[in-house]
Length: 242
Image (cartoon, rainbow, N blue to C red; front, side):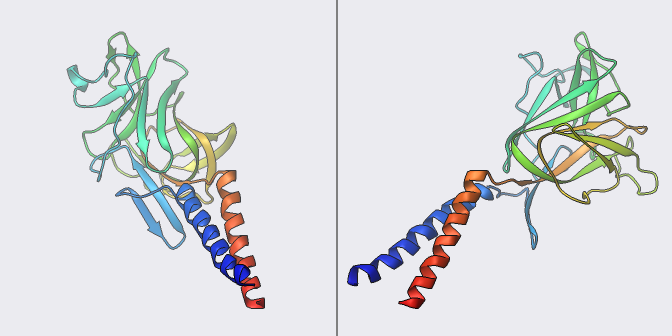
């Protein structure tokens, strides 16, 4: 009997440890870009200035250098693929799409303020002056881990948020599923989960300013958390009976 009484707290402690260990895996989000609300925590990954921390570009153009290191686009960031470090999802890779250009590049406007990501045409060693996402173009975000997208921020050609009455509707493709969203709505009516999010150009050109994401727990993490909770409840019932 003595061993049984001593064993119950040990089991409960072990299950608590398992639950605590599972929690960071399910909510691996902390830092200046993470916002906590009563509904949970989310990360805002910004692609415009000013921002508390502009995402660090880790992608390079043509495997060598950044296309925007000189000339009229100096000080900006552009490459065939751009990578950004996310607290929630790890590496986020962005790339452009175009029906009319053989080699589109992702263009990150750092000046003026409130611009963001766009798509530009690569013509030899130079890029076009049009850096917004236009018709027949698109921009994709590929997350290293599945995420729950809660909303986007878009800016118009004047680098301002879209007014609700004049905002274009945009097509969003998530893992081969199609959605229609409004460029003025910074929050989606319902969250969308996936790994690859492609925004197509609409009747009005735009820049992608930010995306708000939350972590999606892996099945193994959920199972571990469920096991820990079940074990704690079971241990509590046994202790009350004893």
